[in-house]
Length: 177
Image 1: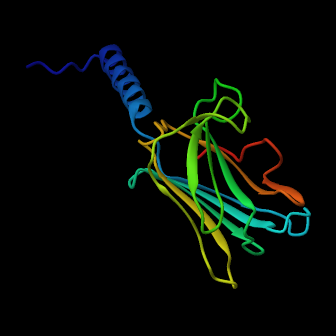
Image 2 (image 1 turned 120 degrees about the vertical axis):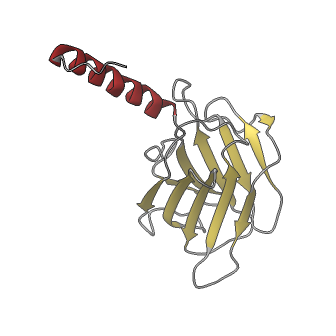
């Protein structure tokens, strides 16, 4: 085997090698990422005011966790998480919603509509019972909803009596994770 010392050939082989690495890196699954958002308390008339949202897209564990700290857990207020998994489509593709100590479900939606087709049964939604740190949480395996590289999240606490509290704002998403 001959090893070339010709500078032009070495440069072109190095460039080719770097190009292959860039292409392969683009084919790798998404890296774990977290985004956190502090929401102003008292900015809504909803009885469950959102204080903080943390979205964790865990690459190694292959799951998406959305953790929402609230001023308090109120029965009858709907916890809704919208997921945008395909940027080319306008709005979310998935709606995950439920109530404290009640049923929850996943809908495949087109945009910000409340109606859709039932999604797969996977993951879980939970509320903490602690009065010190009320938390609503959603955990979904990324393969369940065919989440590719990144996902954008929007969260709402829908209070039928007093309106909704949205993070970051009504029908908008947090940065992608």
